[in-house]
Length: 314
Image (cartoon, rainbow, N blue to C red; front, side):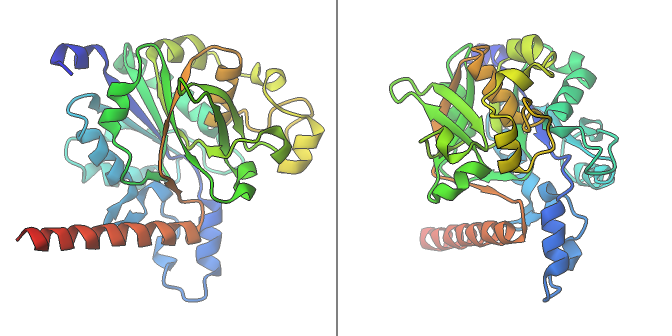
């Protein structure tokens, strides 16, 4: 890709890291060994993985894009409790401005803005800086396996189309816990995106993590004005879904309206966007202590393999 083409397709990034890690922290407290107590109160995006904070893995991927991602426009949105920890992290990252850590001012899980609210907050606060930029949105507690190559993903994404990734679930019971996509095989276009659907709502087993490449026109035209209209128009079965997902949402509204997956599903259904999916082998989603341990195991094995390869080369 030429320098002119890169300049025409610049990407900013919003990392969603305003969660409170309730499940993880409960697991740490309940763990009898006490060996993880030092992680109590640590944001999931800053948990150590492979010898460095999880977020550092994403920063490394952004740097590898050879200018496709503008590192001065990588934003981390978090809550008031975790904000000082992210500022401290930012001070240790070469070239990362602390003003790119955005405090959503919430202090409790009950008072949270939700992922969509946090995304809209960044878009409004950094409106001038991101004007004309396409935007990558990624959850701060997610990592992909080594088959994912960000530069290739961005370069292959057709003009005017948004992008996502998906992988096949090995356990069908996970369908109701994930965002699920139905993909047209010939084009790779997402036909439907369902956030934590009931098992009778789809036969697809393709899970879609919170990673989206959004065109600037979509951000300006649809996301900034996105709101209560999702309630009646999304794939939601009212009281039945309330019971299944234990939601407090009023009947007839979407319990996932504050999730990125819920928003993207609405945009796809209402044909506001064309969303192209790219397959992955898998991903890590650190929701609890067990999943963090699984992530650690994988990355430890990767480091050992890299060391062995280096020894062979010598």
